[in-house]
Length: 273
Length: 273
Image: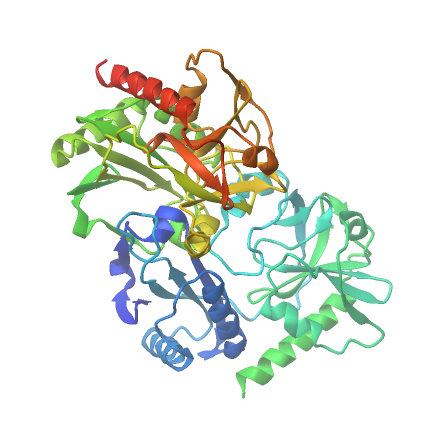
């Protein structure tokens, strides 16, 4: 398997960078993650929009323009031939002589196999809430200090993942957005979150008898919701049946399944475009 | 110059690690920074205390015990022979197959030349305040996202560094603690900060007619202080003459100079011990 570093290909075993890199020295970097189905990157322009936006917000220059970045990704896809995959683009602060001053960024592109074809399964996630507001939330930085640190806490809580809230106001999961369904509303957080591409695709769906609402909501509203689900590139719309040990709704997730079904149709459309 | 990676020495040019490391993937790591004077590491046990504490808080195991780590550092000092230096120990989340799950940590030790012998200079710093609460503040993580991102803001503000506050309550600088002198009190923040080793040494000094106080204080108190200074391993006690463009006190920094003088005596004592 090949990894691209500054638009040169390296075998995985040889894909190394200097310890002077500002990601290692100061945790400084952004990334984005695109999935491919049958070697086709899905919603690639949306991910590019966010990637270049993140770079700009963090004063990182991307040496490749969109066309060049697209070409670099297609070259990697061709070389690796992993039809269903995740493609992670990481942009770091570069090799810094003093370990602090930002320099010429390094661009790393890594492709990994991904089991994309999730059936509309009966599985569902258990989440455990945690009071944490991500810093610079609108930017997809590499900062996952809390998420990684709390891996032990998550497993000790018999949960699959975290649900961040800011003093009871629900935000997001470390790698996914979060929705609840209450009455005839499908609600997701509006402020101080990373706005996921999958989230935005879901907000554009037509779900009969339901309206989408972006607003703040509380943990208590989660506990009393009819359904809850997360959205992400890898999980699509995936049911959440338990939060903080409390069962959510009737556990049937019928609206979530409908949302996921319509989302998969949208993905298929892009795949064949 | 040699760099130690997992207790093996590499030439600087060959000190590379895999892009699978969790510092690059998820900004996950801790570090600490020890200075040497004439090849003697200063206050090494204090830094070790904090380093092992940080590691524990972040669920990272240090493969070397204190004796072995001390030996690794002495080996590097002998090999590099940079008498006045900074020694940075970075402990990352390790090479993670899925780029998320914590694995066996990597320990990187880097030595760089440092101009230690600061004269009791008339120079002083200008700071610009910024509303930011560091996450997991009691741990010396590699998270400097805000500090690096704001480098442009700092220079555009004609300042030398940032002063973080949490809604007007003063915290710390990105790489230093912060003190003000008001009336007969030398005041420094108590909560939600990284407690620096130099800070703790200063708090133990005897300054006639003055008492040390650890408590919350506001930006407004800073603007009206008699003196202000930062403390860090590299800067010792270093005067701050300007915050947010406002001149602090009479610009003579006589108490700060006395504190720095006594601190240097303490360092010399450790150096000769």
